[in-house]
Length: 398
Image (cartoon, rainbow, N blue to C red; front, side, top):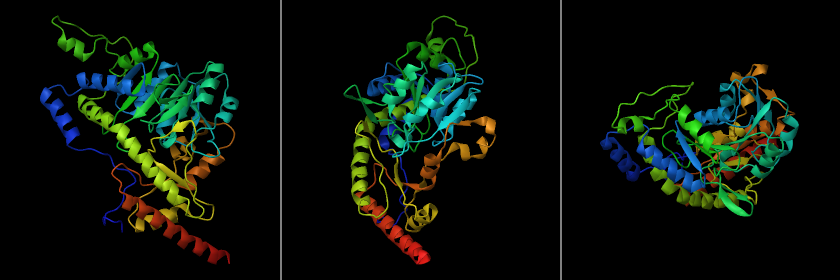
């Protein structure tokens, strides 16, 4: 078992008395739904990433839906994205009545391959939805250039990428500035910055931000905060179809504390990732993830690639038997039953690398509270498991 005798989880949110105090403040204020705390969180998040506008919503899936809607994605349109992502990426496209068009990932990573995007464009293409998978920035420079050349909006699924950075015009800038048209974040407990659940949209376009704020609250013409604070009777109206996509002040209060923590969380995870890379270099056959020279990931997840002769499920079970939790590589949406209908999506080219990434990679434990002894134990367990299984394969071949 692990050094503590407890199972080592894949992820663990960092929450303590500071978040409890923040929630207590909101509870005692008497205003717990979308209000002053949400507004403050939005302002602070925008300043952190360098965005002109930030709008908080209930989760990243709702953020993706609003982002696609605001750039005009509708019935029968196509959106170029990846199958190699959490299912919410494509689901949001289908919420708009549009069709996700799946292209493969890059040869040496888990993000969309920009060289395949242009060939997937058709007259029906209304957006490119790129994913910063596992917190690693995708090649935004190439993708944004393609989008601008074809006048196609670029939406960033930055669910995992709070605190990640990209080298942009020779300057390091936070993901979410945004470099595309809209960036969408998740605050699920698996993410570095968590509010329990929640999401954020960032953009440089004021008109987009205004639409997000309208749509997230049933398209109500007058926000609650304005109506309740007015000295005159105000009757709201609902001029168009909207949604209940609000964030609560309870969540936002937690988010504000988490945002203060975020730089330290990123720094700690980057140190742990370096230790992983050093240790993995001594384990035969395993390939550590590569950070491009133009990217600084937050290492939301640390995903290693297995050699062909090692069975993914057997490695994962061997680690679990020693008290080390893992997860398989990122799913492929087109392989799920929800996408069995051939009309639900379109595949542009092949998805061989996406499928291989799902079947031949595993996500190792990584969280800010992780100790050096726990990380060493993970590496030791991985070394033992790979050696044992490799000997087993050699005997079968022999």
